[in-house]
Image (cartoon, rainbow, N blue to C red; front, top):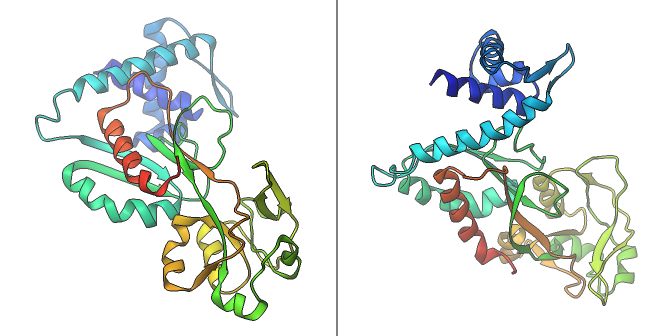
Length: 301
């Protein structure tokens, strides 16, 4: 067990490239983390990590050991949980991340039933517009909306969110409803910018060939958060472009109205991401399967 603990410690140090962060995540003194890695290197007879005052980096042997160590620990976790379903179901901690709108509108209303079926599970749910680092921050899986970048993570495509253009009823009463793209010159667009200060792309739509296009539009307000984006629209600052699921409640109440239905932005891909492991713990597999099923009614194939 001491050897397995040392391996777990080494994995966290290697993934975080930091003894201090590994100590914080594992709830151990930094000195204990350093000692465990040194003893592991002594038993193996090789240096696993290059240490400087600025960074920690795996050696070539350290990288090879990391890959084998990760697979072995995943296999051990799977082995230990083989018979848990018969003995009372899934157990352990799950750490997942997803956009706040998905959490609020889709996942949280259904979550009590899932946790009631698995009372020995402890779920840590992160919901933020920031793209978390799955490995460095210790997440088991994340739900991503939008185009994925190059990554060593495994991506499971779930479908797409259809997008709509909408504005508040009060805004449209003051400024009129645009009927054509040219009408947008007389309207305001609320700009959503994950990084404030970056160039605003404008109103996004698809041309006759289905290719994305952008039309520059004036806008007095830029935001970097989906809650603020919706709040600004409800407050009458202008038009927004959002997945249908995020606006459904406000559309049903009449607070928001759709505009230019013939010019929607391209659908947004929805994906589940997880680390590149040969075996995922059963609790992670079960949650991902549940989440994929839960998302399906809201997705276009």
